[in-house]
Structure formats: structure tokens, C-alpha cells
Image 1 (cartoon, rainbow, N blue to C red):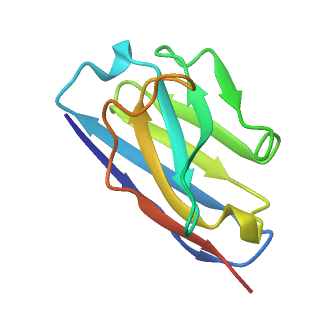
Image 2: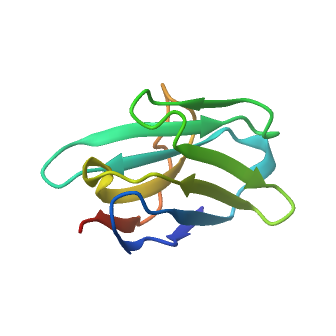
Length: 117
């Protein structure tokens, strides 16, 4: 199993980024997928999940209305559009197999998002 995230960077408050995660080594379209993040000095925080077919999504209260999760099963790719970024969104963002209650059997190496003026 391989999950490779990209798209992070340094952005000012209010800015946007599109994070991507390319999956390989497993049947991507059979798995619910999640984004989780880790702020400096803190533990993992679940951010969002999407069903295997992409029809159901869920979000943490802290990001609902600002972040959009999506997937393209033809490209084995998971996305997270992050908008209206706040300084507290700073952290390493990981894609992971599983949903809100069972993510993490497999996780990528992460992509750094830094929100700062």
C-alpha cells in the first residue's frame, strides 16, 4: 500500500490550497478514505472522510463549510480543497484508509500546510 500526499505549502490566512493523495497497491475504489492532520506538538485530528464511491462525505466541525473532500476513482486520487484557511489549520495533513472511527490502517507521509501572515 502506498499513499503519497502533495499540494501543501505556505499560505496567508484566508488563502486556499488543494491537497492530493495518490494511492497505489490496493483497491482504492473499495475503501472509505479520510484526511487527518497533526498540528505542531499535538496528536492526530480527524478532518474529513468520503465513502468509497464518493457519495457520502463528513467533516469535523472545525473545517465544515471551508474544506471539501473529493475523490477520483479513475485516477486513484483523493483530494482536499482547503479554503478560508486559518492559522489553526497549520499542520501536517495525511490521507488515510478508513473512516472517522477506524482511519489509519494505512497512512501517507503527509504534506505540510502552514498558514501564516
